[in-house]
Picture 1 (cartoon, protein in one colour):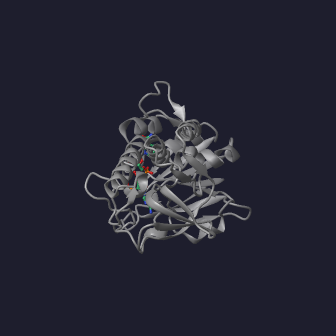
Picture 2: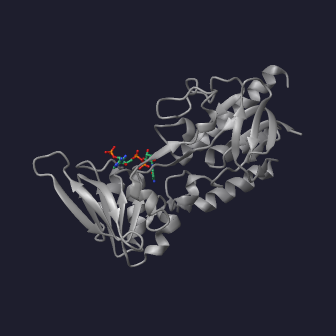
Length: 313
Ligand code: NDP
């Protein structure tokens, strides 16, 4: 037997919880499934310094716990579980949870976020859990006083490198371009940290080691006249090269861009399926901030509420 609800929210980052707060206050009795990573990506970051209203900063875990409590205060039913299939062919829409339970819902708010990308090297699989990680805050602890490398030149890579520099004895930052893409303040922090060595114009070709990662094979200035092979000795290899939106199960029904982000109607959270809305990183290849995700979660709940009231539900 399937359960019937008015508003189903998939995903528990700032977008999902903000949608739950607004939907709860609009009497939609939202049900929220937390997904693979309860609390979303923020729970794997360190300090959050740029969310308005926290003059001394906060942590991702703290913020997500507060958001969860706040949504429950307004009646959101927050549950563990992963949406494994959907049927958006006709309303009410069907969402299967953990391959078993089916929820029938009048509206869906998709806030499934994005997952860390890997380089695609066979060695990333070979050394998974043995020195390869995409989350410094989850795994950095294991590399106290050791040498690690972080791949990427964006804000995430810089943030992870700085975090790891507090634990490790040395951090290489492997950057494929001759410059960092990160914000100026993060660049400055990286460039002035004595424990971080930035390897510009380096790419990773493979990893080596008998008992887990012991080093990486790099190539400097690939394709140039002075191309050079470089090996570095490391104990940990951290990926920070961006994210892939979690949209695989929605592909048959929703318009996605070439990378897989959900396409929404200009300035709204509306997808191409009436009553199905998208919020947060899953529909945002550009900004991808906690505050913008929260803002879009608010919009999705308002859009869902208006959609239902137009139907007279
Ligand atoms: P970005 O897309 O900004 O950066 C990805 C980085 O990885 C780039 O330097 C890119 O290189 C590199 N990269 C991508 N693919 C490869 C590859 N195959 N091999 C080697 N390098 C690769 O992602 P982030 O996760 O850093 O940031 C996402 C968004 O979140 C951004 O808008 C960022 O500003 C924001 N953010 C903000 C934070 C804050 O304000 N505190 C913290 C973390 C993220 P290239 O430059 O050559 O393309």
